[in-house]
Length: 365
Image 1 (cartoon, rainbow, N blue to C red):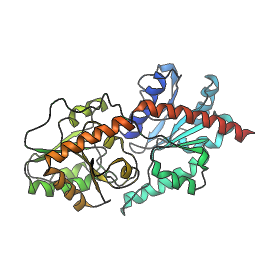
Image 2 (cartoon, rainbow, N blue to C red):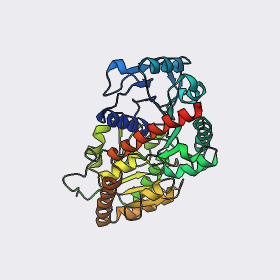
Image 3 (cartoon, rainbow, N blue to C red):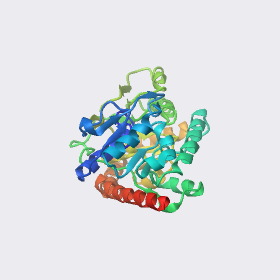
Image 4 (cartoon, one colour):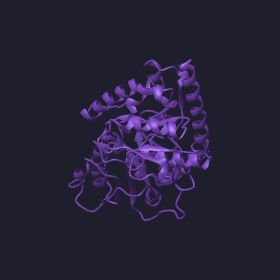
């Protein structure tokens, strides 16, 4: 695996879950990474390269990283390299050295952006650049099925594309043992406090809602550029900022909440949404990407992108309906358990590796 593993984001959570699933399946896994720590692997299977981290999601990697990956792949007889897109500059360079490398499989994490801000424009540029690099891989794995037409339309053969959605550890993200009943409507957000995740919209919407219903709270898990906007949103202690916490501690917090809210402007099948659903929380999120198919009106509220008023209306709707919140939460849990376990996703991933090897052989011939 060519990936980062240490950051508090969905890419690393998925990478760690894939790593664990492959090890549980009896595979020998090596990590090529800029991360200082890779849980579950002995040090002899972790091969590090230096990198300058530009932000929590992307790095400029050492120019020697490709040479090191090629050398260690030959030494350890690596069958396939699984690269995580939106990790570092190495992912753009590797395909140009295919003759010296094992077959290349790519999981594409970076979603296309919706909205009109400069932030979403930047994401759109990054999306197009990543799409260009993806054309040179032997197998492209998409997290979000709604992206597939974009890839086919941009010249990537359909037979080289597979869709493996995010999976959830449903035995970790479980419903609370005791129902919450304190008369306060607790909303929770998990993710980067950034514009692409809609944190600024949520703060404004909660400020309005709290004036209507003072018996409400908002808990924020994560960190980012929007954090300073927390001050001044309300004039009491109804907003609780926890910061970034270990992933395994998130279920405990979710179990004390009533509604999960993330009005993101970046399309994709968000892990945080699915984890909340697995904990029996109804969801308010944006009607973009695969989320449109994941979440129905029986499980939550879909709002239009970049709309504070829509988020506010969603909060009013679920805030005033405790029985509806409970019924939606139960249906959320049922859907995640039925369709999004990691065991099924790992089996699909193994097949993608086999296709990458076959595509590489066909290209060489």
